[in-house]
Amino acid sequence: MPELNPDTSSESTAIDSLYRISSLLSDTDDPKVALNFIVKEIVRVLRPNTASISLLNPDSQRLELEVTEGLPASAANVALEIGQGLTGWVALHGETLIVPDVRKDKRYVCIKDSIRSEMVVPMIDRGSIIGVVNVNSEQLGAFDAQSHKILKLLTNEATRVVTQLWLIRQLRTKANQLETLVNVSQNIVGELASDDILRGLAKEGRKLMDCQCCAVFLLDPDQTHLELHSMVGRQGPVDVINRLAINTSAMGTAIVRRKQIEVSNLAFTEENDFQHVIQQQGLISMLASPIIYKERVVGVLNAYTDRQQRFNNDEKKIFTTLSRLGAIAIQNARLYSRIFSSEEALRRNEKLTTLGMLAAEIAHEIRNPLTVIKLLFDSLDLEFSLDDARQRDVEVIGEKLDHLEEIVGRVLNFGRNRDGLHARYDLNALLEDTLRLVRHKLQQQKIGLEYTPHTAPIFVDVHKGQIQQVALNLILNAVQAMPDGGRIYISTQAEPDMAAFTVQDSGPGIPKAIQSSIFESFLTNRADGTGLGLSISKRIMRGHRGNIELIQSDQNGSCFRAWLPVSQPIQN
Image (cartoon, rainbow, N blue to C red; front, side):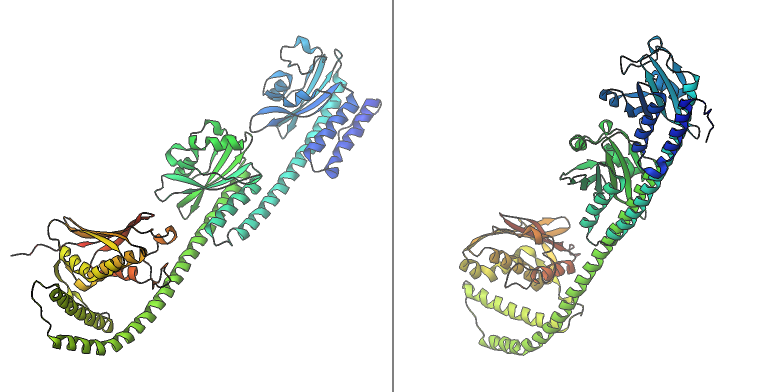
């Protein structure tokens, strides 16, 4: 402790104040409380009319009044640039300034009209200016070398105490941040639902950074836009929808560069589509940290403040750590989703295996009565005149009996190469035969049919029965979707290397919730359905090097399109 001459009462009071200021380290852990106490002690010792302590804001590099004594309330909003006024001059040069008459000094910035003299002492910590102490008097020449000596001692001790309190607070903040990170790792990484993870990431990020808002943006599949998934403010979730182009947004830079970026003033960024949120929430500065897992960018985690701020290295590091934890949690959730999907696939495969065994047993039991029916039908030797529609019905019945016999044989000999069963057919004629099979069904259900074949034959190499099975399944599904009647539109199309047919109905459409899964086995929204028709149809079309897809489905009906390659021209 520096020695003072105890012969004067002011020096004795100063010694007492030095001890009282030193004891603040054990009495409080709040720097603001300590500063208020210190300015009151300065007034008690030197008895000025006003006193104040201004601290240097490291973000704005301006001197802001932290505590005052005797100054008007409006002074709280005063902020000086380095070099501005007597206070700014001292902060710039790091030297004490005593002004006997402030009205004769052009540097003086008037805060209170009655002030006549002023003394300003810098607060210096390890060679750096952290603030300035001002005392003012309404008398001319109120401060001399002795008062300067006392104020300098009090200021030095105050600086030591305040910096130690700041250090203690920083250590506690870091400890709290570390504890929060541990909790985050337990809460977020333990989650298995992606949406819950992302909402939790935004929530924990806001608490960790003690900021105004925290948001999670995800990179879309095309990797051209960022979509806002979750945003959490001090009052809870912020309900807003936003989509930003990467190449026209500041946070897109974090994605492109794969590095953390900082924006001190959001008003000057290019996030035009996000400006209404910025204004609504009063957001000023932003720290954006990319969410990266093994070199793959998932999205970006943003912290927003309601004041202009420069984020320090510790804040940046801990925010980076949080984004990495989020990336791991997101990846874990995705892996779990894949495992769950695999389990579902295994369950479906088990069902299919059981179904296959059951089908083989049923086919074995059907074969004998089917053989008897076929023999008896052949023995009837039914023949009608060529212009009699029944003659064609007899032919169709014979074909279908052959088809049934073939199906039974295929089930019993599953896995045998069936390429030899393919032949060349005209797709137009093949569908015409199929429609003949359901004409009575359509009439009974009061369903109109419009068939528009391609203007020329479309030749395809297919298994006739299987392609008819696909068409029949689509038509019967359409019939079941229109129990009160309606219309079915069927057409064939030809392209240079592809043949296709579409089946469209006027029913109520397929529920959106299952549209993406309608080709999965055992999926059905009908009480009497098996969920196998569309799944089997898709396998048949893929087996013919083609496919089947849902073109559209809404309240006006559904439209399916099946396509397969056209036959190669016959070489003469």
